[in-house]
Image (tube, rainbow, N blue to C red; front, side, top):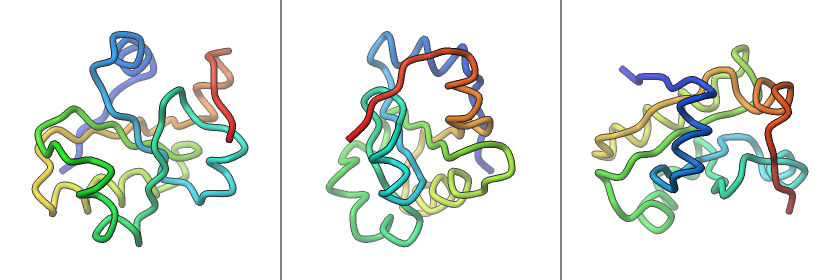
Length: 108
């Protein structure tokens, strides 16, 4: 069962550098816009890429996608948990909530 994090908590963790953020949207969306410092990892690549991208299974990880209607972040979080990651949360409101709040994003 994945737990969630709200925008304020995530913003604080990003600012403090205490979280690894994972964008669970397809690469084309990630390239257009993503949360600061986010890594791109989609559900069908978790098994192949997680160990390389996320070597510390106890590190704080937050997955997100576009908004509450999108289930990509939950799917990636569940797969990470099945691989033994112990501190995975989802930001359910996603990048839509983040940008509507006027918070910074990155491109590329």
